[in-house]
Length: 215
Image (cartoon, rainbow, N blue to C red; front, side, top):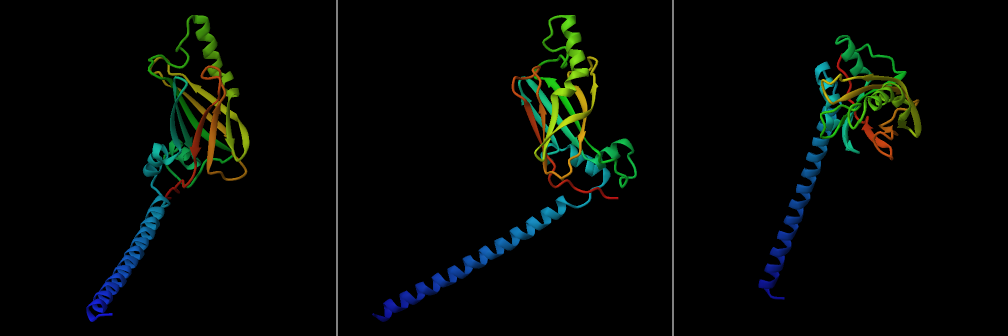
C-alpha cells in the first residue's frame, strides 16, 4: 500500500470517527434537552393554579373537560365540573373547602345547528307537539341520559332543565351522577333519545392531569 493511499485512508477514518463522535454528542444533547423540556412542561401542567386560572383551565376546550360535538343536526356542549370548580362557582372564596364528592357534576348544552329555534321549538308543527316536547325535556329526558365510567353505566341522579325562554337557541341541562369507587381518567356521556338519533350520542370527557387548586 502506497504512502499516499495510507494517508488518505487514515484521514478518512479520522474524519469518520470525529463525525460519529459529533453525531453522538448531538443526539445526547437533544435527548437531554427533550427530557428537560418534558419535565418543565409536566411540572407546569401540574402546578397549583389560582382560582381564576383554575376556572379558565377547566373551561378550556383543549384540556378535555369541556367538549363540543356536532351530531344529528345538533350541537352538544358538555362541561365536566370538578369539585373544586363547583366550590369556586358557588362561593368564590375558601377554595380549600371542596364540595361533597358523592356526586359528579356536568352541564350539557344543546342547540339545533343552523336554527334560531331552541330545542323544544325546533321542528314542531303544532302547540300540542310543542307541549309534548317541553314535558319530555323537562322530565323524561333524564331517563335517556347515562354516564359510562370504569365499565359501569351510571344513571342520571340529578337533573334540571334550564329553559331559554326564547332568549337563545341553547337549552341547558344541569346533570349529576354517582361518583365511581375508582378514580377514572375518562367518562362518556350517553344520550339515547329518539329526538336526536336512532343511535346513541356519545360524548367523551378526559379527566387526565387535572391541576390542583392553590390555597
